[in-house]
Structure formats: structure tokens, C-alpha cells
Image 1 (tube, rainbow, N blue to C red):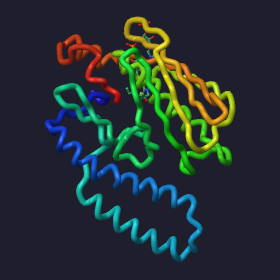
Image 2: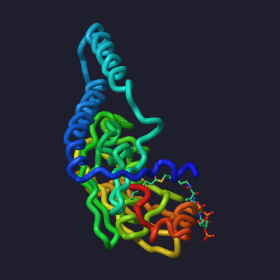
Image 3: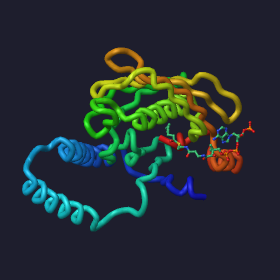
Length: 226
Ligand SMILES: CCCCCCCC(=O)SCCNC(=O)CCNC(=O)[C@H](O)C(C)(C)COP(=O)(O)OP(=O)(O)OC[C@H]1O[C@@H](n2cnc3c(N)ncnc32)[C@H](O)[C@@H]1OP(=O)(O)O
């Protein structure tokens, strides 16, 4: 089924993954800096045309070899996985801020992060959809950390005050759970306190339930959506 196809298993060792991360992490940071510079650079148009030619050459170099589709989630037999293409936390995704999310087995998650020019909506402020993106991920992590991973069924955001670009914090926790459903709550905190509050319903999807029923997975693990 389509959802399960993007879950890969791999045999890479800790050392191999660390060695790869040590190269692709800084590489992705460099592309993030390029995205920021694309928005904020004031060099003249000839310079931009010249830069475009160089960027296109680099893209051609990189796409000589590539995987089909998205990165997916690569799991090892111990259940740990890497979601390096994820739009919020992905080590290899320059669109991701990225967030480094700390979790607690009690079902809590938090991250301190910075959003710059690429995430702007209203002038100087974070785009409401980006706030929703981040809260979706952090609430999902809280659910997963509590042993209750799921796909987002609903997500409600209350935007209490504008969120300025800059240093921010996100926090989330499991509010309640019932069967395959987990309700998580969370918020974004800016320099003047909470800016947005969220409640989400995370549902262990049918295909994951079927894998568990067939004995292919011991329980709601691996944490399918990390
Ligand atoms: C740890 C890392 C965190 C990652 C965070 C990122 C999370 C994401 O962004 S996920 C991407 C966004 N979400 C999606 O794409 C989800 C798309 N939807 C789906 O996959 C499915 O509809 C899904 C999983 C929500 C439910 O599907 P399925 O498991 O087949 O549901 P189904 O068996 O019909 O219903 C199960 C129960 O859930 C309820 N339900 C189903 N969908 C919804 C929904 N969207 N909202 C509310 N309730 C729902 C049903 O009514 C039913 O309830 P009950 O048992 O009480 O009658």
C-alpha cells in the first residue's frame, strides 16, 4: 500500500550514519543559507544571472544519481529510524528549519528553533501555515514518544498573537488517549509568550494496525512517522 512503501529497512551502522550525517548535514545547511540569500541578497541582476548558472550546474551535478520519489523513513532492526527528508526535522531537507525535537516517554516533546526569512507570511512574522506545520510535527512527536504514534486526523490551531521571525520554542504533550486515537496539545512560544495553541488527533492508521495484527510489527513501533 502507498503509505507503507516509503518505509525502508537498512543495515547501516552507527558509524556509517554518523559519517554520512557529518557530510550531508553541513551540505544541507549550505543550501539553507542559499535559500535565505535568494530572498535577501541585494547584488545586481547580472550577478544573480551568473549565480543562477552556477546553481543550475550544481543541480545537474547532484541529479546525475538520485533516488526516485521522497527520502522516506529508513529503519534499522532496533526500531530507530531516520526521516532525513522530513519537512520539519529532515537533516537532508533544506526546507526544514530544522527542528531538533527532544522527547520524553511520558509523551512530551519540545524544541527550540529559529525561523528566518524563508518562513515569513505577514511582514516580519511567521506564516500561519508554517506554524501549523511545526505544531503538527511536534504534537505528532509527543504522541509517538508516548508510544502512541499516528497520522494526523485533525489539527486545530488558535493563533493568539502574531509570531515574530526569530528564536522560538515549541512544546507538546499527550492530553488523552482512547484505543487507536491520541489527542495531543501544544503551543509555540515567542519572546512575548505563547503565540499559537494547537490540539491534534493522531490515529494509528489501518495499514499499521493490520501490520501489527499480521505480526509484522510487535506494536505501534517502529515509530512510523518520525
Ligand atoms: C513522530 C512523528 C510525528 C510526525 C508528525 C507528522 C504527522 C503528519 O503530518 S501525518 C500527515 C497528515 N495526515 C494525513 O495525511 C492523514 C490522512 N488520513 C489517513 O491516513 C487516514 O484517514 C487516517 C489514518 C487518519 C484514518 O484512517 P483509518 O485508520 O483507515 O481510519 P478508520 O479505520 O476509517 O477509522 C478509525 C477511527 O478513526 C476515525 N477517523 C478516521 N479519520 C479521522 C479524521 N480525519 N478525523 C477524526 N477521526 C477520524 C474514524 O471515525 C474511526 O473512529 P471510530 O473507531 O470511533 O469509529
